[in-house]
Image (cartoon, rainbow, N blue to C red; front, side):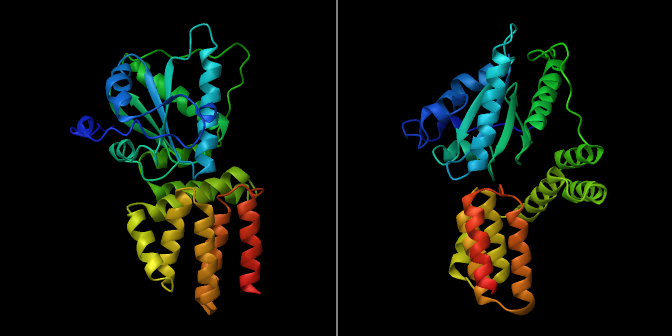
Length: 297
């Protein structure tokens, strides 16, 4: 767990800035510096607060926000209520909030329990995985006297995670990227075509590569040195982690056109790996595949 910076409450008030996404598309409370300090943090002593950090540039982060919103809506319809609060942080509109929460990529989900911030995930989980994460947080918080566990309705079927998936998630919780990759690799050895295993492995590889990178600095350097293959790959990783698929793919396709031999092969393989992180039906991906084919042939 971590706490917000001590000087956070005295930072600039950005609540007057407009949200680029309509209110109808948002899920939960839109978090600003003011309501985070005055309302949300105090409320976390009575109920778990779950925040989803998102960006208008990341369709994936918006889909996770929508899934959490639907889950909170369903939980709120129960006689005992939801048992947790949901908030959303637009990292583009509220950069000071994002900085205070140490947001590096989106989507990123956080829980706040008794004013302590707990990272939950920075991937794109399935709806059953989301349910498991929320339920686990509520259970842990209840043990500390915050809120209560929501009982499952009669006849509900619990979604079972694969053993390798459990190992991967546990490894990620402790920051063990190598362990998470090994677990997903075991799952792929057993089920080579499993889409969740393929996606999980690709996500972990990306998280491992961007861990500790200064995204803004890397992208700036790569823009100045387009012929630097290593920089291009790092910048593309940072951009896709931010949900900027177009920029990520365009950068590597441009690098493919400049490269030859082993460098071109490495760039193509890197780009194909990033393709695995995007919905196969996404027009951006379809267009990028066509552009890559043209660049290669």
